[in-house]
Structure formats: C-alpha cells, structure tokens
Image (cartoon, rainbow, N blue to C red; front, top):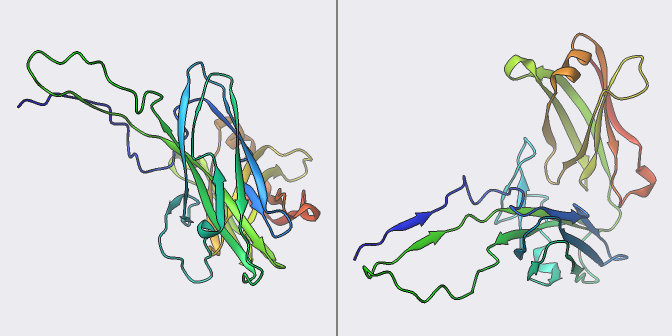
Length: 271
C-alpha cells in the first residue's frame, strides 16, 4: 500500500523555543517558599487564531552558556522540585484575546531539607484540531495520508526556596569576541546556596545612563559560573569599543526584595 506523507518538520523539536502562537506569559519565573506555597501563571492569547497547549513539569539543567538541557538524575548540590509541585489545568485552549490562569502549588514537608529546589513548567503548543475527527471522505486509491506537526514549547522555571539561603557573584572577565568582535562575553561566577537573577548593564566610564541593558540573566544552582554572550547592535558596539566600560550585574530577584536594584557584582573593562 502506498503511503504518501505531508510532513512539516521545523528544526529540532526537542529544544525549548517560543510557542508558535502569540502568547503572553506572566510572570516568566515563579518563586515559592514555605511562606508562599502557591502562585498564578497568566496566559493571554495575543494572536488572531485559537491556540491549544499541554502543560507538564520537567527537570532541566543550565549549561555553562546559559542554555538549558533535559536532566534526569540530580548532580551534587542540585535539587529538583518536580515531586513537590502540583498545577492546574494540564491542558487548555485559548481563543484570540482569551486569558487563562494556571495555578501552581508546592507541597512542602515540615522536615524538608533547606536548599533551593527547581523544576520547569513546560507549555507545549498543539494543534487546536487535535483529537477532532478527520474528514470521512477516503482517498480513491485506498492510500493513507499522514501529517506530522511540529510542536514548539517554552518553559517557566519554578523555584522553591527552603531555609536561609545566600549567594555571591563576581564578574570575572568581559571581552569582545565572535565575528567582527560583535559579541560581548561576560563571565560570571557564583557561590552560595541559591541561584541569582538580575540585569546586566553596560555603562561607559564617566556616563550616568547605561549604553545597553540586558534583562533576566540567571545563574542556577548548582552552576558556579556562566558565560553570558551579549550580541551588540552595531551602534552600541561603536559606542563602547575602545572605551572603559562598567559591567554591572544588578539583582531583580523578587524573592530577595531587600536586594532589588542592588549591584551584585561589577567590573570595569577596556573594550
């Protein structure tokens, strides 16, 4: 029997990529603790077509370059939160302009060891027609047509912090690298018992306002270092090249309100 196929293949389906739909997700990370065991994730379909999603908890590990990979067995000083998390709903369909709240809850045993536990909530886009019956008209040649549909996804980190935790960061080096030296590579180092989260600002020595600001840079436990690659627009590179530039890592960790806006680490380098 002949089996003609219509196949839509889009890159590596296992990688985390923005959902195909125009989806607004807030917040982009969730922080839980014994004092705050639940949170809400808001999804809004900003597109013009209905969009369907399946949700699941996954464990992921940060690579030295900041990208994430699937993780099965925790490494030393690495703690997963998957067995402590519940969420609802597990699948949903959003019409254009519709809003959905996903509730995330943590079950925390009284004797849970202090530390930072982390897993990721994965949102996988799926065809709205999934599960619907196909047209009943059969091909005249008795063949079978198959359509493979690419599934894209995004992940939201869920971090559970138990006990008194701390962290310290340093900016070890910063240098222009890559083609035409258009990438600024900032090497961060972390110590302590929790992850860090913040923005990286680039300010020319003697100026008050940053020439460039990159938001949402995390170093997850148990990683002790991260190479942050900052592709610089041509106009920004021209403004920084040959200058002394202050590179600052500024906390925006909502769970550490007292540190919000605090410079966790900085380095002045000649670019």
